[in-house]
Image (cartoon, rainbow, N blue to C red; front, side):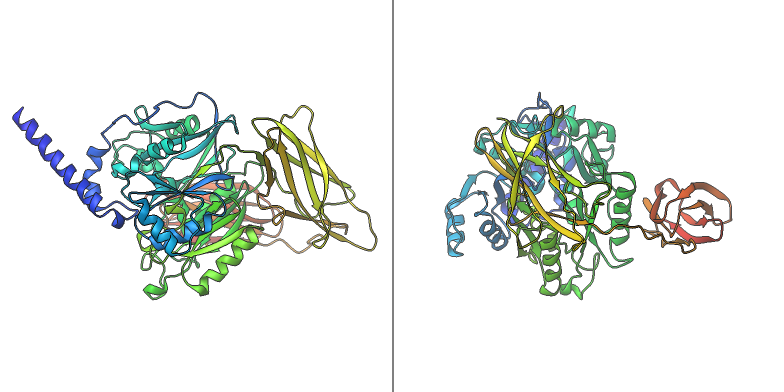
Length: 596
């Protein structure tokens, strides 16, 4: 018994000393685990202190997409105050800003000295350890898609007890119910920077969430992927959880460091120069997504490439020799989008990409050279409270080049829902950029609850072959709530081109077959094998060991014209040298693959 109390005293003393060190140096805590935190992890994650509702919501829930309307943006006022001030400046015109702090007067003074409007600033006096509020604040979900707003938290994957309880403080401050995955059997270790939702039941993470919740992951967990999927479905409404391989040089393995959903079918992916830094694995992850998953609309994801800049402060090197500079780490704040900037020669490219991808948004760049050495930027130090009165509008934009013979009109269909019901929905459209918007009613579709449709009659003209259409959707709820989609309308809208020119030009050239560069190579996980052909061909892809023995047939059959990617999982292979062979009717190609 005496030995037990001695051990208990030793553990308690270590814990108290650690917590005191956190409290003293909170502003210096990085996103990654410190050496002290690694020592504390085992005991910390064995603690199951009660903190909230430890059962899933009784109603079916929907995880909110970041581009939906929000009532408040959250920041924690500790380190990087100059960056936080610029975030507050950009956000106060869009919503309330909740500043988590220990001294509201000091915050007011600093904001006022920078001429920041304080009208929408609210101060949450609550304990905290670090600035990385994206990782430890709660997620937003709605019951019945749009009814009641709930907060859902998990166990933060850092032994930072004050951070891990901030969700309770925010719930109390906002008056919102809080549900937590912090007690067995529904205990999940996770982090907000490694979670993206499309608002329609699909979520994305890196496999960090699998690794940390597995046996031996360091967090006293023993969860399978199926168990994680079940919890995500019950608490967050996630029906499909897509997980990417972790990256070699992204030390924190947070998905927001290299990707960003911009809408339900468009994803922004970071891009490095060929064979540089995490570029090969990022590209393999992207091609895996495109080859195996469709968007919620049942269509291939649209991809926008965002260059990952080098680090001029470290001789223009990329990770691991330079800091992990990224432009994807941005946040939606209603009609404003805030993203990190670093150096003008690269920032201008990112600004143009975002302005083109997000029409109508006020795109604001904030210098993050101070934060990025700690592996974090704008998204990492912000979180949000979704609208408590959402009017949901979901629409798949019309595609370009409609053929008059097959479709003399175009149907605009949207899913529109509010808890009070919809009073009316309208389609606003114009035929060229200089015209004013006309509007027509969108009518309910019989037998399809919450779906509305409007029809545009397409013109017939011998003088003009192509017409450029711009449009947006507006809806009013029975309660009087108004909403547009895109949310930036009428400044932002969708476009499609109606092309009257008919005819199909066949490519009669002889077929060509080509094996692209396999990546990543060397490989240790999901590996991409690019194939290109000018026509449909029958081909075979095989894997051989170094001595010439065939290991497996990766694919055999018809390959359609264009670019196609095939995949193998190098984790299933022993370390060594292999050869991938692509063979068709006329030629064959072989490429070496090194498995590490």
